[in-house]
Image (cartoon, rainbow, N blue to C red; front, side, top):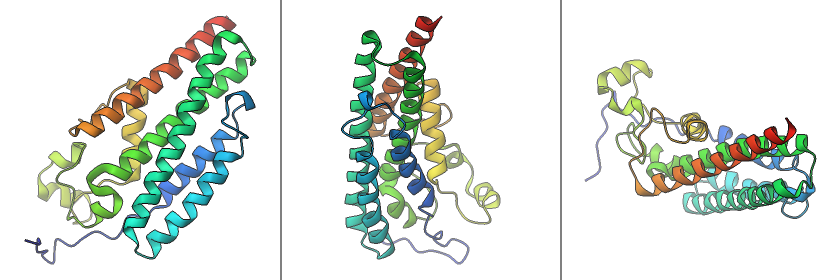
Length: 223
């Protein structure tokens, strides 16, 4: 049975997509800063693929073609994840070979760490509770793969704090979650509930730990 909404409990306006667009473009931009030895193909390849997928993703969203938008969004997430993972493998192999100067290696590791945060924030935002379109069809955010602190507040308090509307996560909430996972190697204030989300957070924490180990190894080598 379809849930009825009261005058005080209307669906939120559609979530703005520009923060996610900026994050994905940032991934492509950061990739161009990597040295050729750590890039998959020419460094301009990923930005070109990102833009070529991002344009139809935005267009399908604006035209209300949500299935196509979801497929394109997931394809984009897979592409940037594969590029990041392969560059990470190249980075690990480059440490003992000393093919790049230490400063370049440190900058590359830091760039991949930031990319890791952005990529997994995009994944969480795309998958949680049916993605941005699925969440937009709900009144508030009662269930999902992550237990955000706002979900534990009483409904009245949540309304008072958010302009009279039930709370729902936005891209910045998933970015904060991804940042904490990469920094502390685990979610801090947001428990992970779904199995797929637990797998993703484990992968993200592993990537972050690998990058930190590379950074430490190069720092020790420099000293």
